[in-house]
Length: 227
Ligand code: IYR
Image 1 (cartoon, helix red, strand yellow):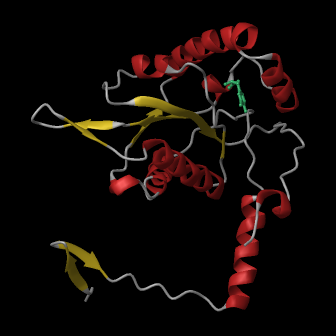
Image 2 (image 1 turned 120 degrees about the horizontal axis):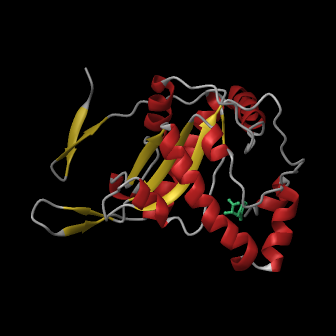
């Protein structure tokens, strides 16, 4: 029987989590790190479809992320329809063309050169599945009033992190794509006014030929300070 108690009149359940001993924990945490370190952002996708149930499990995993006051202020739109993917590609490339030609600074373009990106986004049509993540700054209530959500950016960032880990775990690859500005996504997907585009994440099998930049990650010394 699950233990239960009430705090502020709300039910709490006992969370029995027995952590492993340090030696096992060191081994396992290192194994997880090296496996996560194999995750790469990819831009070359196969068009091989992925089962709907896999996509459902990925989204459910993403939605296990912590969020401000547990509001789960996100909506994951799954786009598999070829015509809609094409529309998204056309609109994204229009914005990206402007960005790369006019809006991005020299410095920004210089920083992107090693990543090898440009305004062309064929993966928006090739990838079998586009997940468009929307953040929900507030909820519309039945009484017509708005109710704010909290730490929406942080919450959505966390959910997307969980999503990327789940995608990697499934043996698939993804791209965290940020067409800018991306309001066209809300229009094309006919989203309600309380939803703002957050990230566009193509998901799929990696193409047989898939090239990623030979990047190095920062060392522990570079990313941490210990007190
Ligand atoms: N949004 C553009 C540009 C871009 C910006 C950053 I910062 C990247 O890390 C990668 C790309 C695009 O998606 O091409």
